Image (cartoon, rainbow, N blue to C red; front, side, top):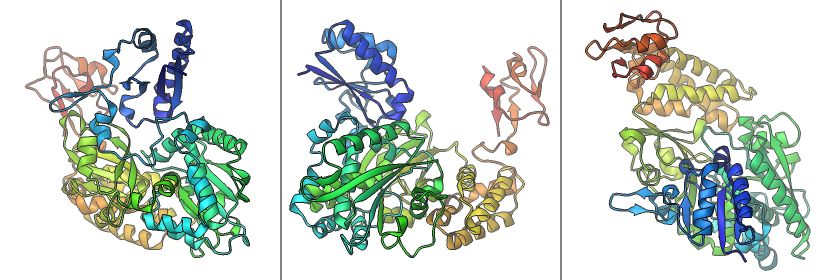
Length: 596
């Protein structure tokens, strides 16, 4: 028995901050003080509060240390673990309006969350099947195999109201029912989409890194429900930690008899294999993903026939994403009514979001459906840095749209987001403030789509390229009002004619910014100005003669020699030489240079 457990976040974010080195140093220090048999060191998955990483939590004291470095480890061991004195300078402290909060569970970041899909992330060792079993792991699989018929399993998923968390929001139980015919007579497959490609999205990666067994258990349950004996997890190769932990989890599950032949002695056979993707965004689309698993170039196929009828290797197949599967065991154990009690009428349960952009608490959050955007950004996210104003939030990545400030109090669910021109997507939520140019944001997502288009259909291959060219013209001050009309016309054409869902939704960022921020497009075209001061070709750098002291620092740091002036005299900028790099602003000690 250990007298204390030290949990260190081992997710990708904290790993980049040195958590591997922290763990190694921690073990060395414990051994040096002969504490290795008293203190357990556990590498966990993501704790969620990425902005404060690397995170270290000491139990049973429940003390959370934030932004830990290798140089802090010796002090933590000597003071806290050896002498029982908390290292106050490293404790995560959330300053609220009237008090300081030191327990993570009491912070605004966690208080309004409801962790279902993320319940084990940051809590257990993802490389230990015993720890997963210790938190009711594989109990749901045992229950369905020994107490429930396949149709009863599908019915409980239907009754729960669970909808696919990969973006489209299709009812999970209905998808399973479509594929459930002819059990035992037809080869079927269960697939997991772990090819998370949206910019700023890391929800599925975090589940795989922090709780890989939950996906294996859920896929086995799905296999029993539809009559499949083989599963595939399609995970991008750029997720090395997730891949390693999945491989380890599959090996452990096979060793324990929880994958393979005759699971729980019931005669049910089910196994899972990994397939690594090469980073093609289009392989997040279900038919392209299956084509890639088959060993072919990842390109979408026309539908119908749908995968439930003719999918992987032309056999009935179901495909759900990681977060969808992460909900399944809890629904089986707690009941459909428990899950349906959370959320809204048409969007049940919780949703995981990756908070990024202009927000204080960047990280991973899981909230009940129906939570308002204001709650997510101002309370859980800690608001926008530097006192800036909220301008918009991008949900759904390249397939989604921007939610403007006028909808700041909208309850987040599938139907509400679609009604205002956005979509849930897989769960990326990028926050923008007054310094973001919405035309530039639309251009960013179109550039991504152009690069990632598989090229199979002309509307996507050519149409998105033409849209990007128009946006590029507008951001350079070369656009016309006719270009704005053409941009909108192209957007609707692509939505109606592209082959797959990714191509059909590619124009959404443009359409939503045109809907809510058309004045910015017009300013770029008519006034030749970027209101947010982002588009370089439309900027002009000016030296305020009232503030300039003639220190020459700006001139000395200008890479093109665009600034001239004598010592202690007002300087000037030659607009023909200025490349608008901003070095002059960065180096001016008197705030004498501004852009307009």
